Image (cartoon, rainbow, N blue to C red):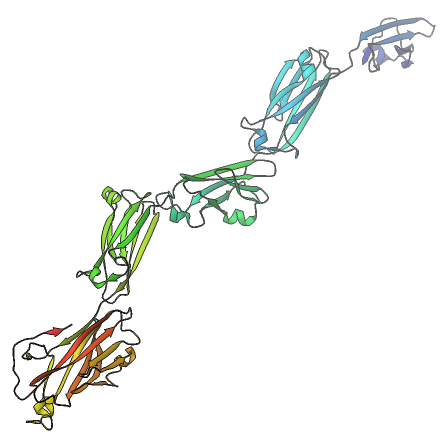
Length: 565
């Protein structure tokens, strides 16, 4: 401290001035000068730490030995207060994240008042801009428990700092400060569930066979390579967790989100966390209609064998399908019924009556089709669909038709298909080759197709009880135009010599019959009859008789036209 020595009247230039401290240590010893007389002398007096006071003594001695002294003493309080301050809550990395700063935009400073600080001292806490955050007279509680102060952090500030200062009544001060870096620019993320169509509701088809929908995660400004992306479903299950790459920033991330059957909605949450702990989250939710309608369809009326016969198909060429609309199908859903070729037989909204009683649809059967099938599909407004189909085989009838080309009938009423005259034989009364020969045709209907072996057979019974048979394969029938086949009867020869098939499946077989032997002279008319049998792929058969009337020189004619089937 400074001691000010004033040299008063009686002191002269050349006198000796000695200044000592409390321990007698000389602080100054020199002759007095005119300047000393004019302005006095200042001397620095040391104060030892802990000294309760400080004192100084000034003595002037003239050349004759006269002396004069004076001293001064002052008490000393030179034990300053002590304080420390620490910014807390910055985690292991020592950097404040957005979460650590919190919603109020502040962090906490802990002020500790150490030895030397006393009740009544003044505590002042300021932020980095010098703004006073707290100023108070220190209490015993402050000494015992310290003081907490909230320090504001401005968005974008790279760091935060705080200064705590304690001042005692004598002006002794102590200060401490702390500073921590700040990363309070959080990452940004958005997530969207895609593929739910215009109505925004996921249907069963939109969910797909794998039971998932797609979430598109977009990583926005503030998100950086090395941040962590976590994607969870509505139950908190982690679907994806990864360190973000540059490709993720450029192109986003797609994640498949599972949808449980019956769930009314699906949701996803994407969270990005940076290395300092700043987080950003986004979620999306979409309703789900993944309970599809239900439908069944059955072709009815095929009998116990489950195969439609020609009679069961009926004259209108259709069979009946019964559609049952089951649980899950609702009024307003759409019912579409199609045949085997995809032709729509019905397309309309489902009604309550349909739900209660079902729907019947007539399904066409094309002649010759080996089977008939029908498909019923129900679609709800969100696009969920359900389908069912049924198929039944068809067994078409086989028919043999032998048309007659004339109106001649035998006297006993037997119907003849063609007529020859024994008079035309070489030894007859009027030989004529045209009279003993007829050329005509018969037709077969076998919409299932002729059987490969034993497709057509000709059977003839001789008068003595013997039987002649000509059996033809399908290939032989189709080759009749090039390779005729013949059967010899009691009185003539029947030859099949032509084959053709019309667009409707009708098969025409050409034949000719030549009379070779005359009947007994006592008989004036006779029927030479050959049975024609056709067999189709399903084993169905039909037969018809080809009747050739043989007449003598005077036949009787009656008007009787007919065909045998």
